Image (tube, rainbow, N blue to C red):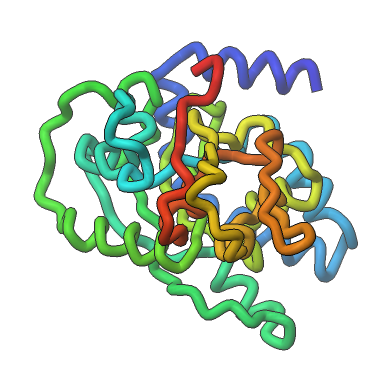
Length: 262
């Protein structure tokens, strides 16, 4: 384990190798996960869970809110503005969601997910978060199509995540995730760990505007909102700042504010 940690640290300190590693993983991700599931199903029961436990050392995710959910009075960097991230990418394409396809294929009897399949936004190379501010020349891509996918995902209540590898500083795909299918999101929810996944924001509530309709509770995957005696109670320690509660609130009772320390 120590050797692996040292290797990951060495790679993360070398931007060239980190980008190569991230880009390579973008190509092998699907066959790798398929192979792990085959081993788990036919050879070693429980292998998938053990694999993900160790694999999570360098394979993770980070929630990022859609910039339309962020208060316009806040001065934020492109790291938090997902549409601005896409504008700065040298290459963008839309791919299918492996998690949803796999769930529907392998567990059709329990899968009730009706969300879109083509929702994963891939970039050309693994991009370091600190480099997003660079003005990268845009290639000819259908930006409006990508924007429409993101906005539809937001309306559907899907969590926007940067999938990172080999460290949390590098990402290669922006996923739009549901709790019923997503591997990374389910790991976070089941183990109640928000470390590494939280965005730079946290929701804040205006009690004077809240009518306790409960719609935001239905949109929260992370148990940050609960209805108790017909009153909405907010638990900020569970909030990851995904912003989905904002787009469902008709009364402007919720905003995103900067998380302390960011």
